[in-house]
Every structure is written in C-alpha cells, then in structure tokens.
Figure 1 (tube, one colour):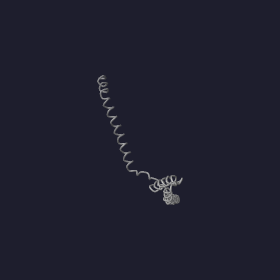
Figure 2: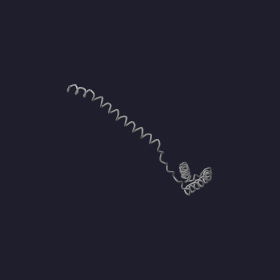
Figure 3: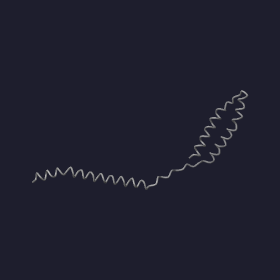
Figure 4: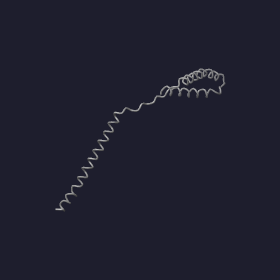
Length: 107
C-alpha cells in the first residue's frame, strides 16, 4: 500500500508541478496585461516647448538682411576684376544665420 501511494505520488508530482507552473504563468500574463493596460491609460508626459528668444531672432534676421543686401555690391566688384576678401565669409555667415533661424522657428 505504501509503495502504491509513493508510486501515485511520484506519478502525479510532475502533473502538479506543471499545473502550478501554468498557474504562475497565468499570473505573470495577467500582471503583464494589467501593466500594459495601465500604460495605455497613462497619457504621455508633456513635451517641454523651447521658448524662442525673440530679441535674438530679430537680431539674426537683421544681420542676415544686411549681409544679403551687401552681396550684390560685392558681386559687382568681381565684374571689375576685384574679388572682395570677405565675400566668402559673408556667404558662409548667411548660410549659418539662415540655418539658425530655420531651426529656431521649426521648434
């Protein structure tokens, strides 16, 4: 009788372990589902907006306009055979200011 009980115990032990593992697995799945559901209900954190420095924006725009107005005069000098030294630097500065203004306004 003892041998039969032991045999029955050892035969049913894997089934009990498997059932327990499924119960634990269901508990984990339910916990993950609950966590996922709670994450769906939580709104995303607000994205902080960058403030635009209007004074700098105006200053950069004015500088850009001034530089752009001076380029045609420099180009006219090249037709006379004179290449202004700072023309290349002006054009690079115009590019840089234009990129800065664009990035500030697109944020």
